[in-house]
Length: 115
Image 1 (cartoon, one colour):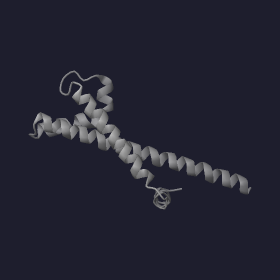
Image 2 (cartoon, rainbow, N blue to C red):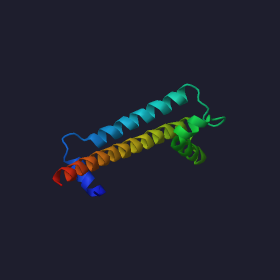
Image 3 (cartoon, rainbow, N blue to C red):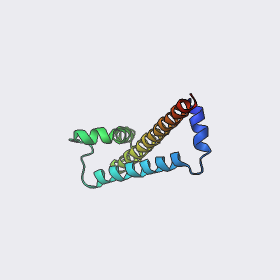
Image 4 (cartoon, one colour):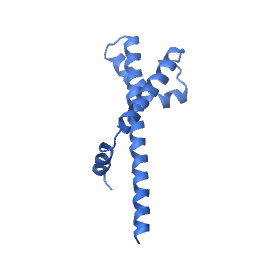
């Protein structure tokens, strides 16, 4: 079982499950990061540990954008977008991992039945 066969199998499915999962992860990341930012979450000072872990890509990209000369509002938008992309990637990877595990279990069951 290699990644090529997983991708081919996922492409032959009727619905683009991986793309839908990534879109859901992106929406979740954008929503959470926007809520944190709009509800007065500390962006530059005194960041809680849970927020530092959950929004690490956003803080990194926001600081990088701010250091490169963007305004605070623009750097927050870059950070929120980065969190959305990170959550989309995590959701897509989790979906492919779940699909690979499901496929491995099915092939193990078929091997067991054929013996």
